[in-house]
Image 1 (cartoon, one colour):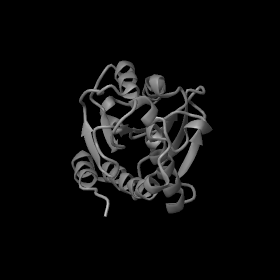
Image 2: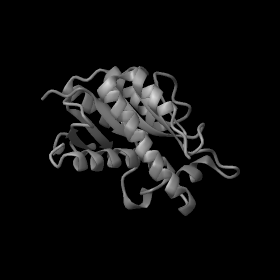
Image 3: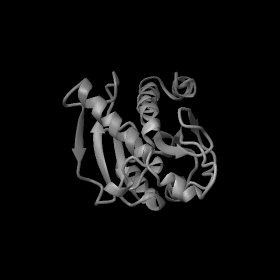
Image 4: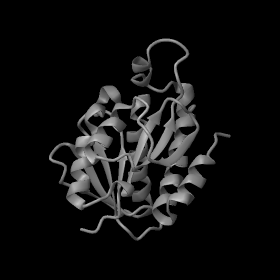
Length: 201
């Protein structure tokens, strides 16, 4: 099966984690799947390859004729690399062909950045992926969630978005979709241009 790359939405499985800040990567992955199927009912098809480590879909995104794998690790955040490593080995995917969608404390909600390589800045999902790929040289879409003014970071990221934030989150999901579509159709430089320019109105 010819797969051009892997798009990974990071998050934690289970209803208790739905719509939490730490699950913004999952939310973007879900949005990509829904949008692809709106574009064409047969644009995505589920795959049974993850050995329960992850859910996977083979998708065409936007106008691209190539297939991409969209995965959501079911290993919980700290072991995300197990899922990504398995998928990349199964399809012979290099780190440079991987895009990880993840929440980012160092950016406010409504901002996002596209980059390749770099550190994990304490993000356990990224740390696990680095370990299992043996490389930092994968693409990241950093999705801002902001920092708490007080209290623990761990509680903050596991809290749900507030009602007042949800309208902004919907716009972020669409902005992230455009960034991913730019990547799969036009490459890294265009993805950086589209993603980094995104701002809330």
